[in-house]
Image: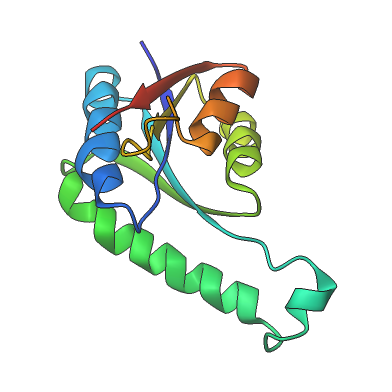
Length: 142
């Protein structure tokens, strides 16, 4: 079974807490492994954009997002589950793939998103993760 599950969630999408995180936690409960819960802070990398933010802004936003991640996922996970909280920075799908390698994930769980758009089978980030991941990917639909 899976021992290192990486679940990528968007804290602004309630279905990720309700469905994606719940699914990953259930899978992790069977194996007793570690659940790596991550969210991604968009990069402010372009110097043209970055100059409009005060010095240290990215670090401050990362700390606030980490606190929000810890607070919002707590009610959705059983007591005693081994959880690592991760805030990545940059492009969502690239950050998920990079973190998957870093934590030695053997499964990535990600929400499909955009179910209201008939033209999409998957959201663009989920589709890219599926195409480029070196491990199994479970795409969760609400």
